[in-house]
Image (cartoon, rainbow, N blue to C red):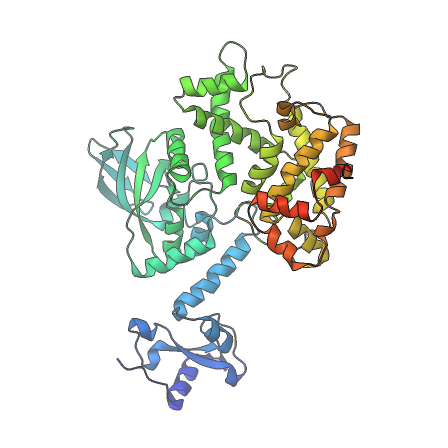
Length: 495
């Protein structure tokens, strides 16, 4: 098929077709095109995809959208802009955008999560949908867990996000890629759901389901479990997205989910006779819950970290992105783990009996949160302001650049160990696992102010930015030393 140019007469007809009440509007966003010189014409279905060349497949667009549309069809480009706006509004929510938000945008807030009634027989189920219709489906049983399940093509009106088992928010880039995929291709694997309180809760396949809904699909292929143990499913989901992952949970989500499992096991452990300790709890998980020691320690560590992250007085939370790093957040949970937690939280498990005079875990948390709040006050408040993009913000960007943070955090631990007069290597690795008095925190605050007042944070030399962004702490530590920033300089020990 030969590609051709529109004639002036054809352009006139296209304009007439898309003019309402005397106003010509851009096909993409329905905004008026007031200047005739700004009108461009574009195929609704691309010519490269065998779209027709007659004027029924042509629409007017403003010059700005025509420039940005690239290889997308007009419908795809319009949906892309709508999706961008949808996520921009959704990011204002504290917990991000979920499948429920996508369903509500298409069906209304009361249009999804419809209940159904299920009758179970030996080898099939009978499902009564919300509209009164009934369908029969073969019933299957997992040979390992003995969970029963069935496959069905489910109306999106019956779907709802499983907030207990699927805590992740949606990623806009991932959802957009899947949206384009489902415009052309079929769904290879079903979404995974469970039946709870007569609702079909989707816990795996949120992105592909949201993409299909956005693309206009009214039904989604699902695998639905009946009466499955939520805890067993939760552990399966965590394993699938942690060790066997195709797409990992955000670190903060994994920490929170592991903490949920921790709380359930912790309560059972406390009910057992005998003295209690972190080491005893790990042994309990290994012997009674059949976890590996590494997995048991991971759950304990995650609970300790989550307790610090969620502590109401921890003001560093305001500067941590729930997802990966954005311009609005200088830190991610992963970055906090690799730096502040790695340097200032004693590695679990400890042997001390819980709440004994030798157990300083609670005091360690309080000490670390006090340190983090001092760091916020000195290095972030009145500095971190992505909208302003001023000199103060530029210094904060340098302080929290990937390599920079990983270099000065261990340096700070060395300084604090010196301030607390800790000599033993083990004690210097557990600087906050003790009582720290007001006088000591006064000294620590003075050293923090000196650290964040070093001239390299303010120097206009572009070489500084290039080196601080290198995500190699040893490289950045050496760069710090060449620029005169070292523990000795902070402590005033340089000759």
